[in-house]
Length: 166
Image (tube, rainbow, N blue to C red; front, side):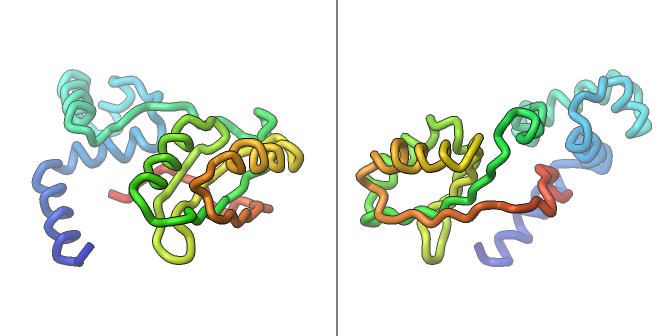
């Protein structure tokens, strides 16, 4: 998107949210389990208006959901793979087929439509190399729309956050 659009969108964001709203969003990104009372103390406001602001932020779509972030190693999903996918052809049919199937696969935790050499990038968790091989051959391999795959095995994680800068 052009910079003008980004600046306009950012200005629109800043006009809609005041300093307290932004503080509430920052605090909830750090810890979504905060009670309204704890959140109110952090933003120096009483609980009732904080509750109303939080509900408005949810209703307006600034807060999409609340979730627990699990440790993949403790859940037995010790292998993270970034899988780059190229479709056989750039068509609506292949794109729809691919995205509808991927949306229903639990091992795929993120999927991005990308520019460049590949059409999509998937973030996949597997329990073992054998499980990933079975996944590629048995699940992705069954998708006729896929032209090629390129797997990148993550050997270490430097940063992993869902915190959006405000």
